[in-house]
Length: 86
Image (cartoon, rainbow, N blue to C red; front, side, top):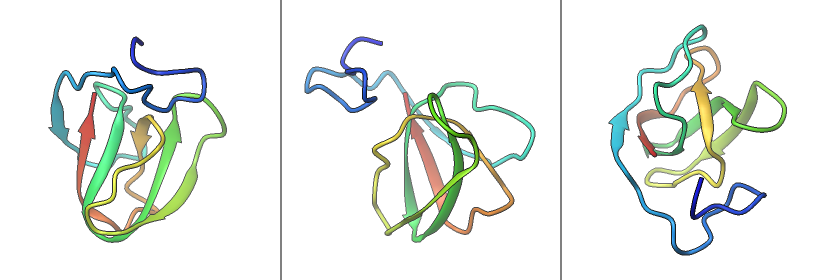
C-alpha cells in the first residue's frame, strides 16, 4: 500500500480513502483493514495485518493505533466508538 513502509507506519504521504465505524467480531475480518481509533478508552484485541493474531493493547480516548488491523475482536475489547481508517 502506498504511503506505508515495511513496519506498517505511515510514511508521510499516505492517504485515507475512507472511514468506517467498527463492530467488533470474533469471527469476521474487517471489510477494509486499516488503522483504528477509539472514542472511549479501553482495551482493543485485534489481529494486525502482519504479526501475531489476538494482540491486546490499551488505548486512551481519541487515540489512533500505530498498527493496521484486519480484525477487531468482540471478546477482549472494552474500548468503544472504534473507527477504521483505510
